[in-house]
Image (cartoon, rainbow, N blue to C red):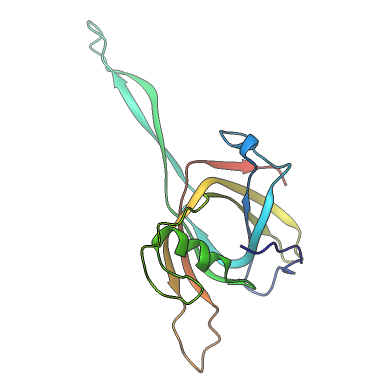
Amino acid sequence: MADSNDDFAPPMFGFRFHVAFVREPISARGGGSGASGDEPLCHGAFSEVTGLEATMEARAIKEGGANYGAHQRAGQVSFATVVLKRGMTRERDLWNWWGLFSGAGGSDGAVRANGAFAHRLTVRITLLDIDGTPRLQWRLERAMPVKFKAADFNGRATDVGIEEIHLAHEGLFFEAV
């Protein structure tokens, strides 16, 4: 993936979410925020983000002699698939990243099982206000693409290049901007 240091200059009209894909250094893996030493890989602007949710399973503990009800304890947390919709990037890096996981999207665009190793990435999703000031930011840890949908071809439309990219991840964090 290409190193992209130039600003994408958001917000463009209708694109209120700036999304940055970074690879954290090995020392930052395992629960740290990894803000220092991140290796920026690519970024883009998206008009819609869904699936920023976490669900905790409540575990009922029944106690003998306590007939009023079971005790509720915190259980395992699961995360929804995050969907980035109607996006724009200057690079083809998201397609190449998808290709490493799926076996598709090589330099020639062929679909094949190539067995390549692909890094899971940290994804930072920043909500921008109308003048481009960051307001809210979420971080997805160890994200990987699970679905990629290109925009439909229409010569009269002004569709953008990425219709949807779905990301499975292992952690959702709300960060200070």
